[in-house]
Length: 202
Image 1 (tube, rainbow, N blue to C red):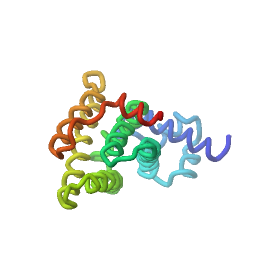
Image 2: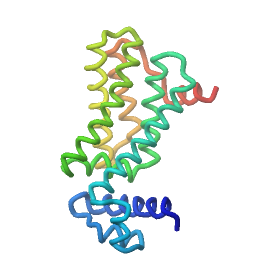
Image 3: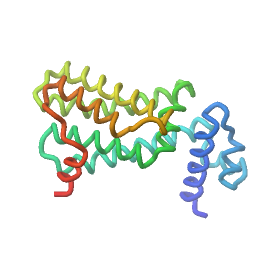
Image 4: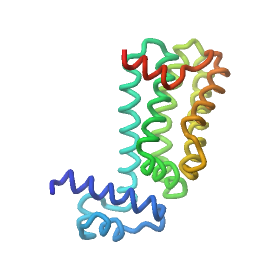
């Protein structure tokens, strides 16, 4: 097994263990056993349990940002870019449900450094949204506040879904958040996910 494949195997095992046990109950020995390797092998790739968890946060962030960049590329207006970004985030979360739950549920109350790391990532998304809103003609300070409010609302909805996935319709809840903010920003009715996909396909 190559170095990269062993690391991926450890991350996959860690994701399962964190999803089952939560951050504080999960142990390095459990992760190593789930990956079929020795505890010493875990330390070759991750100095601490926190470093391993941080790698999972980064993995989700990378997937989200890659999807956002691909979704935004064919769009020609800031409103369309904003809609495409939200659609991309939703699809990644739905496609990576276990990883999403691990990151969005178990980061809270884990360690201050991990919470700060996730917060910094969320600010990256907020700055992107604020830039789109400013391009739409919204005052920069209002765009900044609105972007953080939007990211916060989205985060709470996703957190609810991550905790109760069987009872929540993530796509429907995100659509409602989008509708409320679009109206508040006077952007009209937001395009449906199917419309965004059709635009991307052209």
